[in-house]
Amino acid sequence: MRKFISAFGFSNTIGFIGLGNMGIGMAHNLAKTRVVYAYDVSPAWQSNIESSNIKPVNQVADVAANADTIITMLPNDKIVKSVAQEIFKKSKKILIDSSTISPYTSYELAKMAQDTQNIYADAPVSGSVSEAKLGTITFMVGAEKELYEKISPILKEMGKNIFNCGKIGEGQIAKMCGNMALAIQMISVCEALALGKNMGMDPAMLSSIMSVSSSRCWTVDTYNPAPGVMPNVPSNKDYDGGFMVELMLKDLGIGIEASRLSGTDTQLGQHAYQIYNKLNEHLGKKDFAIVYKELIKCK
Ligand code: NAD
View 1 (cartoon, helix red, strand yellow):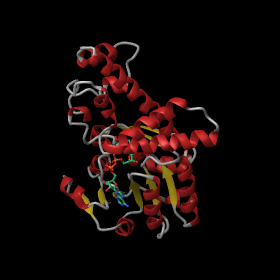
View 2 (cartoon, helix red, strand yellow):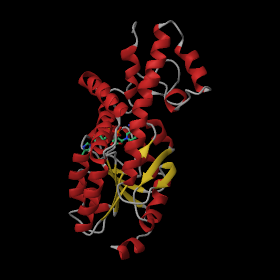
View 3 (cartoon, protein in one colour):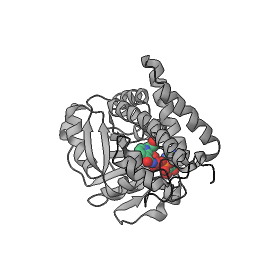
View 4 (tube, rainbow, N blue to C red):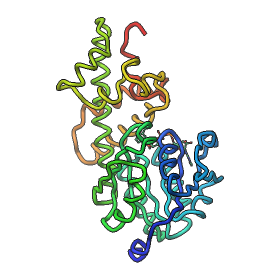
């Protein structure tokens, strides 16, 4: 396989599986220079194709038949594993998984790849749906140096910051830790803005102050959860088209399981899990900033 990584060169054909909120923008960025063979289980995505370089196909096997390097951007561990199994029916494929899944599943996928003469790297991303469209997301890659050097030019077509964390699974460890912090940060900002609003203060004014104060963070200055404060964020679109509550809940679940296995005390992460678990009962498809709306007295 090492010989295969060395021989692996630039190809203008690539595969992409999972053309949802994030994947569709990422695939369009690749399609600026490449032909992208793309598959999603739900055909609805095809009405969003804006490039003749994106070629929809009918199943995972068709992607693997047309491309040696395949990127997956899928909802969860179970789905990534079943798609990987399909891809690994062939050999000498490079699977770059950009979904957020457990680091422990990454270790399993790397083993599956090795057993079937294939190659796997975890490359989850940080950033919003708008950033995926703009090509400014951050990639956290778990791959040995040689593989990283081969795949990073592809990732640079979709992202602005590319980090090689080093070992398989470490991209997912970085993503998991970052998202646990983000979940807690979002809840804290929603509580602060809702407290101000419930006491009669304009959330736009409060956000302007927080944006240049010690409470400044991404959730305040880039992804504000209060409607009317910022254009082009999910809170301004009735919390649609963003990072869904059910996905944040999945990520927190991964973090809590990893906390248990590593003996780490993550109390606020567990509290955030309970809050998103409750929201998931009726608002699972809404953006995770919807915590704010639930805290407002006069909706
Ligand atoms: P999404 O639900 O919008 O997209 C996932 C897509 O996968 C859907 O279009 C779905 O139809 C498709 N899919 C499901 N099962 C499939 C299968 N068996 N074969 C082919 N396609 C299948 O989710 P998203 O927001 O694009 O997120 C994708 C991944 O990226 C998740 O793991 C998420 O945690 C992560 N992520 C999301 C964001 C965000 O802001 N949305 C940010 C960073 C990371």
